[in-house]
Length: 512
Ligand code: BES
Ligand code: MN
Ligand code: ZN
Image (cartoon, rainbow, N blue to C red; front, top):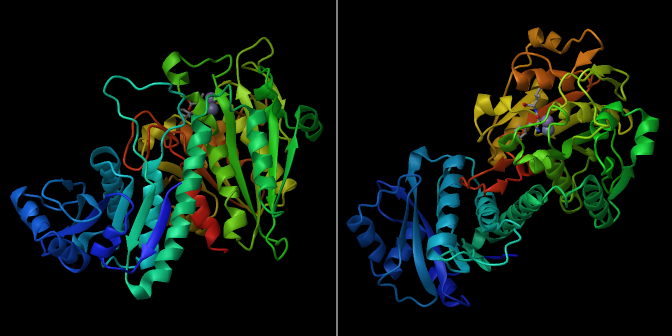
């Protein structure tokens, strides 16, 4: 774990106090002379920074770093990482985030020191407080420090083990010190919770079984100081509750499905308004009898990315202490191939009473979510529901793998959610739930088919909406393309990204 510090001492002093030589990350604007903290650093190096910027033709445009590693003989200083912020007047929060990702990545891979000193330079960003700046720095330091939970026992020839941070020292003024400290605290919580979700997603599916997920949920409750309770239902109880969706999906698996129900109650007592969080928890999706091909199945341990985000968000609530009741549910199951597997043409009855004709066994997510959504409203009393699900390949065709698709039935709720996402630095885009597409889910044999024609992400969202009660506000985030990556990109590592945690936490923070 990284140790974060905030101090109002001068750069030279902060460097000299480092236990080992530290990398100095210095954000610089283009088209202006160095000032403030940047000027101080330049003076400290005898003008080396400005000289090197000049010589190397470094234009501090966004997405550019310059590592200065020669001619440095300053106590406690390893290397200087200049990172361009572009023109001062054009800087945005997402631009700042991108620059931070680049700088911490550079510090990890090129400049390689276990210590970083980061002056909170005056970025003049409208609406960005020192607290938020410090928060993003801490969050990105954590996120870029993430190392996949691999099982490697050796290094290949020239492969270097990943460098890790021991400490990050944030420099600020005396009067912003306490704000910076608050920001650091939240940023670290967000970063670590996201990293935890990444670990859950990366864990192979023979380890991360429904039972294992339930164990994690139980542990979250056990560690909550009594603020969270956990109930896990087995197959027998799910049968009693009539959860035909989850049970059909689970039919072909040796590992039994588990239905996880976490309840967070604020210290001041339960509230009438209840936020329901639902995470898709398919621990492996082979496609069932309508089996996927090799490439399509390769990363399908990630089909519980929604569950991971929801669980890791819940784990933060006892710390953040929002004054609202939160109920989180996950219907955890595998989707496998077996003589007992559900078959195309089967008709099942969901907990809500609606019947579904299974026309594609690979559209299993919506079957499990149907029961989870119904449960969280009916038994959990949820009045506003957010579901996160790796639901469709179609969302990737529409938005690529950098943007999460969002759907909702209540404009103001959706706006709130999207603004939380923007604040959190998670790219999301809303799709219309056009009434015309609703009937694409009509079936001859049942109330609904799980394989309606048309734009897959929208038709799937319409399917879920059929299980949302009148008067309940609901959001569906399709994270199929954003929850897992085959290559590192920006702040996302290869593998699980932990998408959703930061947005959910921001959203719930408004109640803190
Ligand atoms: N889990 C998949 C969706 C998915 C695809 C997640 C790619 C992550 C990456 C989901 O269960 C699925 O198979 N969806 C099908 C639905 C179709 C059969 C109606 C899809 O999108 O192809
Ligand atoms: Mn599937
Ligand atoms: Zn799936």
